[in-house]
Image (tube, rainbow over the protein chains, first blue to last red):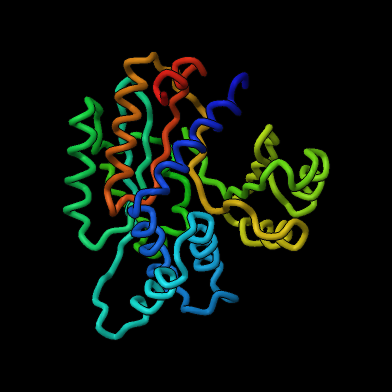
Length: 150
Length: 117
C-alpha cells in the first residue's frame, strides 16, 4: 500500500503528543487494575499485567503510578469494578469505528460515546459489523463479552 | 470488516525484514509487515501468548504488543470527512473510560500532512 508507512509515521508523532497528556496514565492505570483483578499481581504469571506495565514504561509512566495502580487493585477498600465494553459505530463518510472502554459506569460511558458520534455527524448504537458473530475476544471474557452496539 | 488479532511491534533497527519474518513464522505468527520504522507482527488471538514469548526470547521486549482490531476493508475519505473523523477520534480518546479506538479510514498522504500540521 503506497504511502502507508508515512501515514503510520504521522500517527506515531501524534501518539507522542498524546502521551504528554496525563490521560494516558489514567488509561494504562485502569488496564493495570483490571489485569491485577483478573489474574493477580504476579507479573510472571500475568501476561496482561506484563503488557500493561510495558505499555506504561513505553509512555514513561512513573514507577510510583504503576505501583499505586497495582496497590489500588489489591486494596480491600477498592470497590471499583471496571467492565470492558466494546462500542461500534460509523463516523462520517461510512468509516467504521470500534471503541474499547474500561468503565465503572456503563450507562455514563455509552451516553458519552454516543454524544461524540452525534456531535461529529456519525451514526452509532447499531449492531453493524459482521465480526460480532466471531467468538468474543479474550479480554471481553471479563465482562462476558458484552457489546453495547445494538 | 475488522479482524481481531494480536499485534507485536519492534523497531525497524532490531532486525532485518528477512530475519524478523523468519523468526515470526517460526514463532507461529500470521504475518509481518516491515516498514521504514517498524516491524509489525500479527498473529491469531489464541496464539498471541506463545508468539509473544518466542519473539521476546529472541529479540527482547517489543516496543508495543497487545490485541488490536485490524481493518481488512479500508474506507477512503476526502479532507473534510477526514477532519471530522479525526475530531471524533480525539473526542473519544480524550474520554478517561475509553481505552482504544480503531477505525478503517484511509486518506492520502498530503491530506494527512495538512491535517496534522
